[in-house]
Amino acid sequence: MSTCTSASRHLDEPLAGTAATARTWLLLEQPGPWGVKALTSSHLDPALGHALEAAAEGTGVRVALIRRPGRHADCREVRERRVYAAHTSPGNIWLHSATTSDPRQLLDLDLAALGRGDHRTFGTVLQGRPHTGDPLALVCTNGKRDRCCALLGRPLAAELAASGLEGTWEVTHLGGHRFSPTLLVLPFGYVYGRAEAPHVKEVLHGVRDGRIVTEGCRGNSAWERPGQAAELAVRTETGEDAADALTVVRTDGTAPRWTVTVTHADGRRWTVAVTQGAPQPPRPESCGSPLGSPATMDVMTVRELAPAAPTR
Image (cartoon, rainbow, N blue to C red):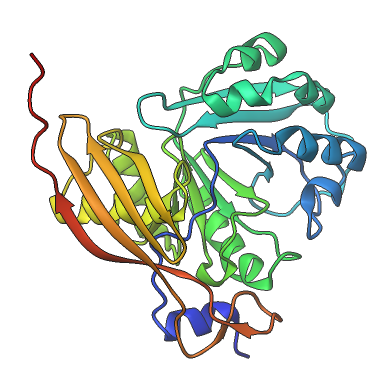
């Protein structure tokens, strides 16, 4: 049976510039089944889910549910839940964790501040602290959203967890079902597609050393899609793998053409020309969806700029 994933692989659809966009991720543990829109169709109080969605709108925060890999007891009562918050913008990258017995506490967080990279309310409301364990490998497994996420994502999450990676979680939705298995790696916020366990372990080893593996990478969620493609193109062009070395400082233009400015922590700058493509032949963006031409972010040129003249 053909799936959106098999069609995407067959057509060798590019991965760069396809990551979900979020400067800050807020993750709440919620065991049990998840529906299509998990925040409002799980055992989490749907009124709370709606309130979290409304509170996060326009803040740069993306709220998602997580659960441990494996079989899930269909229980409605959860005594303690893990909560994570992560900001992914270079220069202010952090990952904090907490536990709560009352998920309604999340409504007391200042999500606008979290979106700006200010974690203070995560500490005051939830007594959150900097995360000191393994990097988080969050594998999309929501089969109600797309069957590929369950068929391909859940075995990957189980394999990673069985290998001893304590930072492995299942997550509700990362977008790009056709790139399953897809995962988000925190704290740096890079998203990967068509992932396999040996490659994920390489990615996580790099994260522990503060390095980014670009193979299979869809982009950094801190940037909009043209910026994601541009930053990866500069990494490929220069071989730069330090996680916090590059920043997307400006994006000029509108679809289908942008000029993206990427800077290095050492002062170097590049302009990257990105064009929105409409690949042929048509293919499904998700299992069961009509055929279409999902937009690609095609990098046309990468040009290093001359150093800025010193000011007197």
